[in-house]
Image 1 (cartoon, chains in turn cyan, blue, green, brown):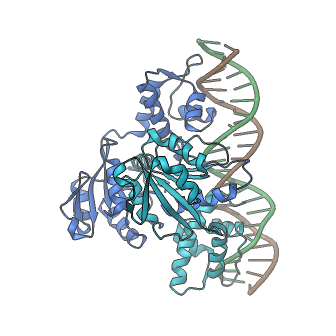
Image 2 (image 1 turned 120 degrees about the vertical axis):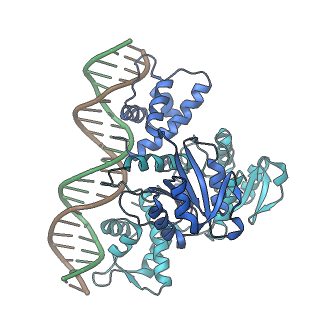
Image 3 (image 1 turned 60 degrees about the vertical axis):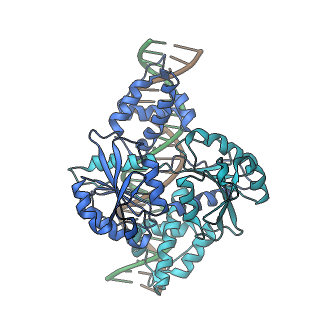
Length: 218
Length: 218
DNA sequence: GCCTGTGAAGCTATTCACAGCT
DNA sequence: AGCTGTGAATAGCTTCACAGGC
């Protein structure tokens, strides 16, 4: 089975592999990839197994094969569209960040309650009033939602999105979204992450042994 | 032991508890907190145990006690300062986001290689050239770093930060930072998170059973 | 000799289930 | 009756270690 943690690492390996390919490399050993991504060699091999990719004892893994296999797992066959709610500082940064990055996963509409934004195009993405959320999501065939608004309004917006047909949400609001089964929610909580860094940094003051290095943000 | 996952949940419980307190509530049961945060009641009780907080069978947990105990665990005794590198869209959003949010964890300086920014104050945070990184980090007694620059430059900047005395890093660059033991690194990878949402959303198309709800971004 | 693929072992995290309290 | 605290059970994830291949 392709588990959550494996999916995260695949996304990570892929970037590395793409770099290697760009450098003209053809093959890679599990321990190379491991060293570059900060995981163990066994882990890399297990992950490759999980996506049905296999290497060869003398040359390691064939990079083109790996990239194909990872693509088959991670990339949608048909494009998937996302809508963002909350065109504040964070929302704009998110739109800018994803612009053109993944051709098959695109933020196609942005919503906000500030009327000054209606009709404006922010980093290539058109803004709509939240009232049009249902209509626009359905018209544009959007299935992913990105929530970048204060915690107080997040639950309501999530419900509206789901009602309109969204089945996966990336939530930046520091609150638990309660949604029906079958809707996938991924949370990114900036405050929590910073608190975590601050906490473990304090823990490590002095005794620098058994370092508890954070990994890929899961 | 207070493990990584527990720390994440504590940060989360705290927000809920603060809201409850604001509403005038005095006590809370583990299953209430559980329902509101999307974890199980046992989990809540285990977490409270981990920070040495205990409840009472008839009223549940005393909210003020929990908040104290969580604060003792999560909050630094003395303020901890952070520096951000990369005053692009994302960097600005991060600075704006944290501004005034945690009095004891503050972003005190921002660095960028764009000379137009030098001396400017972005969302209350002064910008410096990256060349001044070492000096400013030492002068301002900064121990946390936030990296919001492209992957290509991230490793180099991380090394400079560590050399200047930073011991914990929040990394938004989609790359593995290789740092010496004893330095804590927490990664937030936006591309990966969106890919993950897209992936699991596809998995759930059709069969909506055994929903694989994402939790707190770990 | 050094690599992959993988069963088995080892860890870590979560949930169960129930004794004990109020 | 319904809650907390917690040993024991379970589930999930990672690493070990080694057989087999080039």
